Amino acid sequence: MSMIDIAALDDIPRQGARVVRTPLGCVAVFRTADDHVFALDDRCPHKGGPLSEGIVHGAQVTCPLHGWVFDMATGSAQGADDGRVVTYAVRSENGRVLLDAAALSGRRAA
Image 1 (cartoon, rainbow, N blue to C red):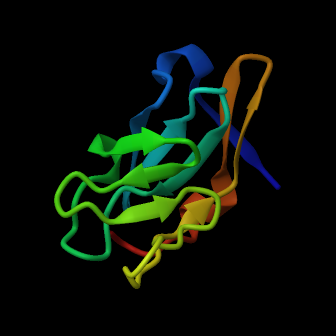
Image 2 (tube, rainbow, N blue to C red; image 1 turned 135 degrees about the vertical axis):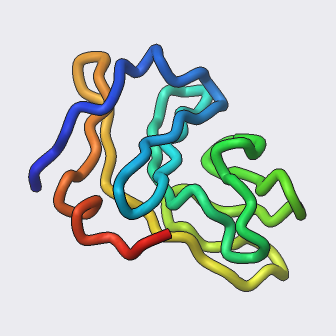
């Protein structure tokens, strides 16, 4: 897997996100309170809300528009909601955040 360095871990606030813009759309990269990182499409499938502006709690993010809750590890909506967002391989290594370059180049347009 080819990984690209996208940011320092400290550039992403705990329980927050940063956006990686690609020619095919945006990816939200999240950091949890315990420094785990996750990467998802930055678009809620319900109404297109920017997930990067959502509330991070544990390993979940709540869409800021209508409250859909997504498991950041799987991309699945939680509870009664039916939906899914695409997830991307990401990891933190030596204080840097690395994202799967191959997945980004093969993603669908957002």
